Length: 166
Image (cartoon, rainbow, N blue to C red; front, top):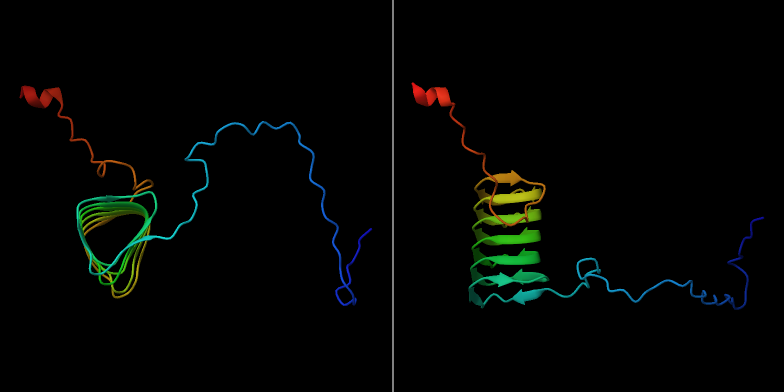
């Protein structure tokens, strides 16, 4: 019923080579949309400590900033190094702040380490703030913080028609 392989037996062990399965008539000629295809993990783009960028940065990949950026950054993952300063909005699925950010941060996962200095609002799905991090602003949880547009605002109250007649 059950078989047990002996690990302590001397001599070479040979494993049978599996035979390829015959084709089952599946149609594999269709195209997979880019959004459904798994994203290949690549090394992050690194902006070194002596680099200053004036303008917006947008990528589907990962970015590690060690220098200064005067503009907005949109990426898959953003790591703000300890020597980095970013003045602008950050939008990324995952944001790790070790340095200074002046502006709004929007991300699914936002983490402020002990060396972080953030001046601005944080809109997140999950957030972690380590002891020692400096943060001035407001924190708001949203189910989809990456959605385009700003934080939804409540509609102003509607006045009744009777109040205007008085």
